[in-house]
Length: 211
Length: 211
DNA sequence: CGAAAATACGAGCGATTGCTCGTGTTAGTC
DNA sequence: GACTAACACGAGCAATCGCTCGTATTTTCG
Image (cartoon, rainbow over all chains, first blue to last red):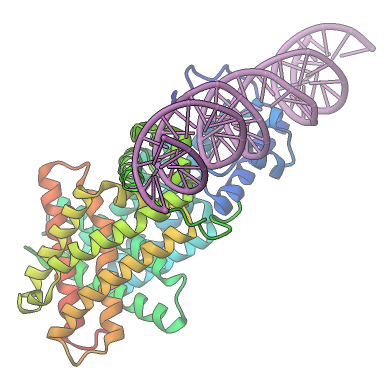
């Protein structure tokens, strides 16, 4: 499989109409991906959803991969501000259970607000570029959580807190989907259990050596 | 997309040669899937890998989905015995940290021994049948872990232990891949952190009410 | 042995899909 | 108003992939 863009873009002077179309196409791509996944999201389907012909689509994106590449900055941007709100410096003053609770709610809210990103960051084989962007985003979120942890545990090495943040977020990402197909009782039990696990772990991680 | 087999199989009396071929095809499918993922695993590629023509392949499996369906019992069978060894009744007598350690090692070993299963159980959109089989396997493993927990915490409701087991396994499945692209130091830190998180959580879950 | 069933082959069909191309329309600049 | 580049269209190309079909060989069984 040949890599995406072989050469740099041919430098086209976009007009306002074109920029608007690009946004519409990206919106459509987001919607289609959220519904059927990235691999199953056809370019013709995206074009149709955007109310645009396939030919027009390829006037803005040279191939399917470039659509994905253009989608990444949006997500990174939006996720960045989203998590900045949820895991800001004021979170460092709350009790750990509160931080965990806020983080869980934030994750759920983000998943509902941007379902396509959920699909993309969990879909397996898309592109190395997406994997890199996803990893960057995870690293950034983890760094934010690690900062919250560091504010209350200055004596713990930063590397340890970073690992702890990554672990906690990965665990949360894995467990949260378990709440989807479950009845209310089990869903509450899962969330309670997850909260207990994360709270206990992060408290021990900010308390000192945990090995 | 139409569902898999519309009618029941036409009842063919398989000869020894045919049964051997079916195993070879399934082995090939396993290898190809482990390499490129299920969706990207072409039937022609599987046939070629098995040293068989596409036509021969379709004499044993009516469509690609049936290959997947035939792969599932193998995995369920092998995983069942695998986990039975790791989480047998003797595990109930070990300290919790030991149980967690054994489980983690078991998961890593299983992933290395059966990479295709790792791909299948993490691949997103394959088939409802696979999703069901995967869920069954996870449930079975969770039940086994829950039994180990129940042996040391008879007073805790079974439903709570089941949830705890599911959470612990999901978290482990999510965190373990973090050890892949990391240097040795970070890998050890991740495993140590995961072990600490799971041990703490499962100990609190078997101690009593955790909410 | 001889017939029927099972196994084997591989070219290629049919459908899908990412993408092109020839042509026509609209916006920006002088 | 005229010229150019950007925008727009949609039929259809080329490649892929799941799968079929006509035919030939091997096994089973009377």
